Each structure stands twice: as C-alpha cells, then as structure tokens.
Length: 540
Image (cartoon, rainbow, N blue to C red; front, top):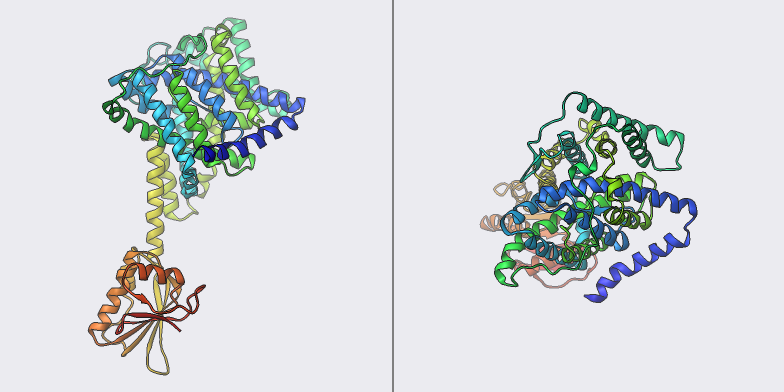
C-alpha cells in the first residue's frame, strides 16, 4: 500500500514540479505569484463564511484553507486547482458540531481523509469518467448559481445574519445609499476585470479590480462592509492537536456517517473540478492522485485544527483564468493566506467585500455553461432533462446528491434506449428452418422484448437464433434465452444458438445453463450451436 501511495504521487508530482521550476522565467513566476495572491484574497471571506456555516471559529476555516490548499497544491492531480474550506462540506458539518462539539468534527475530518486516501489507493477516482456530459453541464450551472447565491449574504448588514443548517440567512438587508454604494463598487470591480485584459496583462484582472476598488474605498473613507466586519482573521500558526474525543466504538459510529458523506462530497466536487480545470489547461489524468492528495490534506488539517475541505471551483477558475498553469500559484495562495493570518490581518480586513463579490460574480459568469441554454432544444430530451435536473438538485440539495441523481437518471435513460433497440430479422432456409438474426444488446431491459420477438406456435420444427449482431450481457439475458428455449421445447421444436462470442460462452457456462463441449475458435466463437434437445453447446 505504501509503495502504491508513493507511485501515485512521486512520478507525477516530482516530474511536474521539476518542470515547473526548470523552465521558470521571471515573467512566469510573476504570473503565478500574482494569481496566487488574487486567490488568497478571494479565499479569506469564503473561509470565514463557511466557518460560520459550520458553527466553528473563523480561524478553523482559515487553517483548513491554508493546509488543504498547500498540500493539494504540492501533490494534487492537477496543477492550477485550488482547494480549501467549502460550503458543500460546511452544511454537513454543522449538525455534527451542534450535537457533539468541534472536537468530533476534527476526528470526522481525519477519518474523512483516511477514506479518501483509500479511494485513491484503490484507484476509484477513475469512475468519475462515468459521469455523463449532461451531468457535468448541470453541475457547473448549479454550482455557478450556488456561488451567486452565496454572495448575496454580503449585501446584508454585517452581524445580522443568522446561522442555519443551510448556511447564513435571516440577516437585515442593506438599503438606501449603502446598498447603492455596494452595488456601484461591485459593478466597478466587474468592469475593471472585463476591461483590464484589453489594456494590459501585467497583473491579473481580478487582482487589479480588488486593488483599485480597495484603494478607492480606503482613500475616500467610504462606509461599506469590509472583510473585518465579518470577523477578525488575525491568529497564529496552526498547532498540532489530537482530537479530544473518546477512542471508542461509540465515537466511531458517531463520526463514521459524517465522514463517509464528507469524503464522498469532497471527492465528487474535487474530481469534477479536476475535469473542468483539465479542459482549460489541456491536461488529463490524475484522478486517483487527487483522491490521495485530498485525503492526505484532510488527515493533516484534522490534526491541526482545521475543518477540512476539497477543491473550490470558483477559486480554481480565478486561478487558471489569471494565467496560472503550475503548482506554484496554489502554493503561493496558501502561503499568502498564512501571511494574512500572521501579520497582514489589519490590512486585509480593510478590503471592501464589494470588490470580492465583484470577482466572484465574474467567476459565476465565466463558470455558467451558457451554451447549454442554446442546445437544450437540440439535444435529446433525456439529456436536456438531466441538465436541468442536476442544476436544480445542486441548488436545492447538494452537489453529491445532484451528481448521483444525474448519473442514475442518465443510466436509466440509456438502458431504456438500449432496450428499445432489441429486434430481429427472420427468414427461412432452403431446409425449412426459421432463422432469427437478433440485433441489439440482450440485457435486463431488453429481455422481455427479446421473448416477444419469436412466433412459438407458427415457427417450423427447426429454429436458429443468430447472435452475430447481439450481445448477451447479464443473468436476465440468460433467463430470457432459457425462456425462449423452454417454450420451443414444450412445443417439440429444436433450437440452435449461433455466433455467441467467447465471453458469452463463459457467461452461459458459469451460470450452469449450458455445457461447452468443445471450442475450436477461442478468439471469436464463430457459428456456435446450442441444441435444446441435448443441452449441449458445441463449436462447428
């Protein structure tokens, strides 16, 4: 297991890190560091807000953003990805914290990380490829809406929001001049981000937007909500801390359900973000390595007083669209965040929330798959339904539920379409036998349709079922073949099965339905006949 863990991280991480530093120019270093600074600034209010959602101290969220961000940047599966404390995990944590306290949360985060490492070692990350494209579109659309809705809490009077199981709510909304000023600064930030790339690429557009708006607010002393109004971010280094919980089976049964849910949500969100970042950077692979990195990060953060985390699509989009393409930006973002906590808290707390909201609104615009709105009328109805369904469930429930629902609905839709494809062409031979040439997969969804193909009463004495254009898939298919054979046998008729592929031979034989007498064509199994009268499968 240790050797496999090493192989998952060593080859990719060392090679990519060596490449990052070997070909590093001053211009590339500037881009990576500035992108990291921009991400760090955007991480602060998010980490604080998600800590409030989970019902823990803001530093618990900030420490998680630092540790998870640093570890995944070092050994993660995709350079450019940003990880930290997320709302999807926070809404699960709040119940555990409310019932048992923060120490149980730290223990659950450690166990969550162990489960994620196991998933990586077992290479379960590859199953993310089973997520259909319509589910991905629904995922990004739903997440864009969730990010947008999360920013609306910044338009509330600081200190008036209440914490619920679904986040911060119930606050008093800004009105009058404070609201107009907030909206104006948000619009100004978005305008700067839109215009800046057309003028210069010296600094990332989001960083320029934050810097210019912050300078205006501080310079003119404008009375608008700032980062410091949420909470103080000043603190020390995270310290090693073993969760103070009883080491008993009772504790395990308390934290295990939460850890399983957190691990699943964290991996799903991280692996989907990995695919999105890969689409932008043109890189593939690394799913299992990302699972190991996320798990390692969460084990460490659980022992250093952090609330755990996973990949953050919003900050990842800020990072890659600021030009970052190496691990340096992610490392820099984590270190800048630690610097903010240790020495720069008074300065960072003066940054207006409007500037950060403007950055996230631009992320929403860039994340939402606008082309999905145009193709809804052109794609198959099932795909359009899945896109809308996943979007809605992501907003109303959470990401993990939405993806699972989307995959299940897509699979059922595929099974239904495949079931309708089962059919057969029939003709009579010169010897008077009826030949059925079956087309389409034979599985649980098409087994009933397969049985309905045959005319048991009016067919001649000899019937040939040819599977050259079909495939026997599962136990339901075997039962369907036996049902057809039994119906013909009951009428005193003889059936031959032809062109069963080798894997079908094995499937039928293992099930105990047929006996393979000989096999003179092991690669293809051409012209294999099964006699209902003898119960023998033989090669010809």
